[in-house]
Length: 107
Image 1 (cartoon, rainbow, N blue to C red):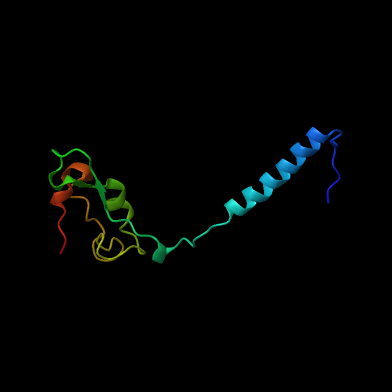
Image 2: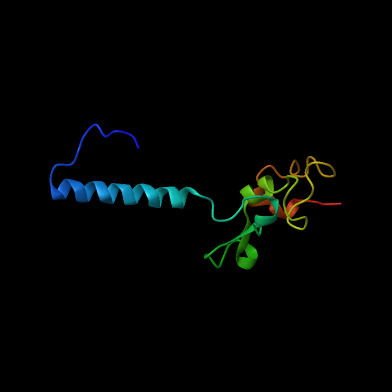
């Protein structure tokens, strides 16, 4: 154990030290990942619900992050096209995906 530079002298200071030690242990426990992150544990639906009933049609809209972020090599295949091999530039036809997502064409 490392030598302390400052030592608690009264009961209140000792209680604060005990509290700080407990918080350190709790922080270390929370820092450990609870679920492994990887290709099989990630699932984004690709849609975000929209509370406004008028726009867009169907009360859903494509999330631009999902379309651009899910074309990698480890996402569910039905979510977005394979952006590494088959459809490298699938999103060129509509640069504003949040507005023009219905224009996306897949083979």
